[in-house]
Image 1 (cartoon, rainbow, N blue to C red):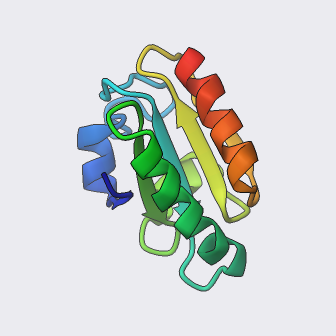
Image 2: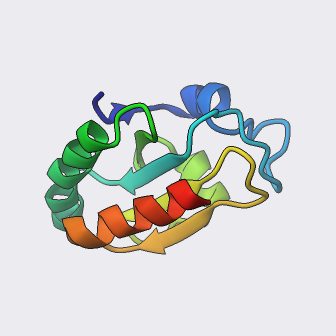
Length: 120
């Protein structure tokens, strides 16, 4: 499984319908999700990308990892109040609200956050 780059339309279809419920969170996903809000010009984002690919392979079938380009999707960026990249959004299928984490992290910390998400 690879990390999938998604647009707002795909976000609405796969994760949460922000058009219908912009202020709340109603998950459309059946697996926990990790969404990387990133920018192509961001050095820390580029450093995080291979780690996300590695954990996507390790957690295949247990978590879905998506990437949203903040420059290409300003509406999503604004809706989630993304001010720093990278920002990671973690959400369970049954969660009321996703959790946001700012900045880059190492693989061990990333795996710890994913394990916490999986335990839900």
